Image (cartoon, rainbow over all chains, first blue to last red; front, side):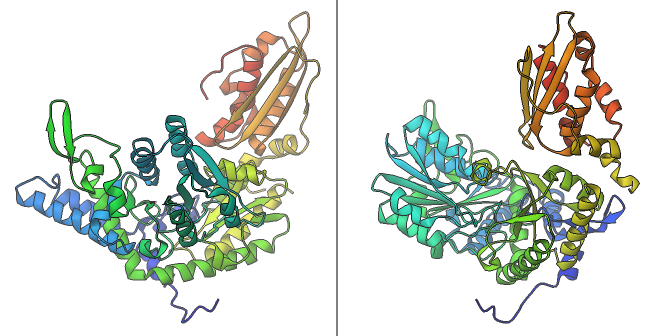
Length: 415
Length: 129
């Protein structure tokens, strides 16, 4: 696939925005290769949250005074920019939660358990999912007698979309899939999957925790009904997540949390819900988190998501090539960097992933090791654990060279 | 080797690459299996206790990182032939002293997995990790 004009990122300039890169780890410059777990944050995001706390801190929506109006304006302004970022039709389609996990649980509860699902209705997931897109559906099965089915993965890391021919039937009510695997990096054809779900009248629920931070995502082009992602993986604060829902579907979804904010009126023994999206946002929201996520979206938009994706595709290609040249290193996932995101899982002969991570830590290099909260996927590949390096806007080829040098040290220690 | 790699000193690597008492005892008077769900490390201990309440023989089996597997190997060496009471009396501190390496909180769980498993096999509850 031809990539027109290489509008890559100016990484040295990007890195200057991230205060954490000023520090040393074990007397060595920090090489951060764990953005799939959580990203670092630029000073623009840190400043935006500090600014809220220090200049216009107040609760949102009902305060009559100036501070409260400023806080509400910034809070709702962030919602508008986040809606634009994912091409939602309106800000009312953006619900704030604490995480991707909570977003997916909201759907499982509000549309599944409290919704119209009946015993024997089917939910189609995949073997590629993170635990947060497995366990909520277990709840739905346990409460409603729904049947869970799963699309498989090929040896090379591709989602077996042909499995949907058998899996999606007239009994299917929900098809859920990750847009991008947090272990293999595989990017899945969500638009096709959503279309197939709609053909049988099912809804399509997308885990976008690993995609929204790293590539342009257009919920209207995807045609999905729900899409969940987290702030902390996209340069934003921790504790803030988003659930996008198509407006008519959100209207038909019950709230997960009852309390303040989410009601229109309450009487002893009864209540009427507030409008979408507020009916899903019971309790004082994470105001600083929302404002910080708004700043993160501004930062990413400033870089351009096409450029972010192109940069990470280049880095992934380079990483696959360099790691592939190391003897005793086994790589997982698709060879084509255009079909995967900047997530590279690998194992080393004779060395456990935890030992790999410990030795790299001494070199100032942060990678992840373990099952990556995707045990069904790990079982599919018969792996107890892998090491995983993941990339973002502040990484460059030097980081990958440092990783490769670190892995050679690992091999020396265990030789 | 650079001092910064002290976690992987000779003794640990030696026990990792050439584990002592690895396998499964059959028959075994006592056995237990434990895992660390965070990292997937697994240790199974099989123990044969004789009539005079001594550990006549012991084996460990499992998979995991160098720290968990080497500490299991070292533990079997230290308790083999010893009274059950002595094995039960082993503490977390005894294990860490024997390993002689600095460990982070996460890696501590790897280092102590074999002790927890042995204590469970011998019918003792484990001290906190």
